[in-house]
Length: 498
Image (cartoon, rainbow, N blue to C red; front, side, top):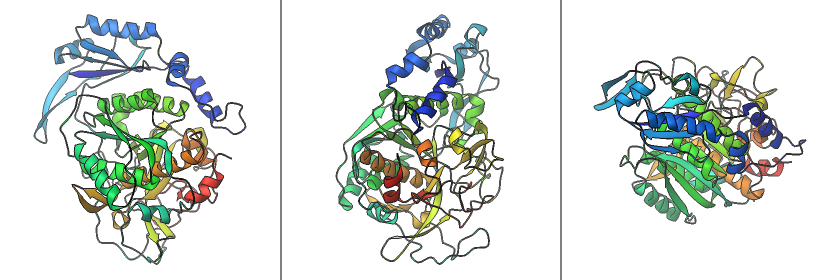
């Protein structure tokens, strides 16, 4: 078994204050950011704390003990018996969908001496994994839903290539993302994904972006998510039109343990200004197994370093995805993680409607776009005065982009263009927009969320007031269906950072 111990940050409250200061136009620290080395020295677990953890693992017989560069993660290999003994837990094996999986039937524990050092133990189960919300088209309705409103659909259903999205979201004279590095979080065998990216670039007259695949765990031959990574790579770089470099972080699987390693590699490398995670799971799972604590620390480091993670809000509307039958049109109201993290920009879904010349006409909240209030994550300060005052947990989504598969993207899958959608499309579209904005501002914008909320109610956003995602209607202003709204790229470029 391969386990990952998440260690606690030092000076967490000071870190939160620092992130707020570098995002405030009135602060002398505005626009600054930390290097990974500076982050470790100020907020990372100390060397003595790390040594206490590695010594314990070594005494328990674990091998291949490794410490991440920021001291947040300690990984090790051991037998099931060693795991049960070291963490006072009980493991059981089950057969799920034809595969053998394991699950701890009691909570993992550490000795009292490590209780204030270790925040969570990951890898003691592999039953639950994040899913990628990618959707194919279905027959469209003729009018919008929500608030009894209807709307003419002048160019719907249709599908868009990158230039179509660029025009619809008004990139105008905004520079391309050619000066900015971006990242995609993926898993499995990506060889076919790169081939499809080159096919899409040639078909749409786009430049071939430089890329690197960065392995973050044991290499996997899995190709079940390849269609998803096709969408992510083609429409992040396509919306940006060009990027300086595309980094594809490649995890072994989409289990919480493997995803944590992937996110952490993104922040310790500090190579990309922003990345997109087009996957998620009901937030209760990472809360219960401790992955939420670990990942939130990682995302906080990213914010302090001026990096942004965008994440899909999910494709089951304002409902939970606890079971295959839970979700649209009814279920338990809940949100997905990592979109629920305060230090992640959650991207919800819309139905994009354009005029006959391809220009923007209207958007509706997409019925299946994820949204709602987090049960486990507190609302960040930048949502104060924007999200309804009755909201205690983080409000999801933060922003929205096209996700309806009936107004979806032409994605090259195994060399063939295929129309797909989902908030898996919305998140990389937002990443592509952010790459343009960063390039236009010398890569000095930093963590996106506070800057975007500072533009609430401005021309930088299309305020979406039609449609709903089940329990939540789109309304004037921020709402649980579309957040702040979608980008008008030219307007946002003129406004942001000022």
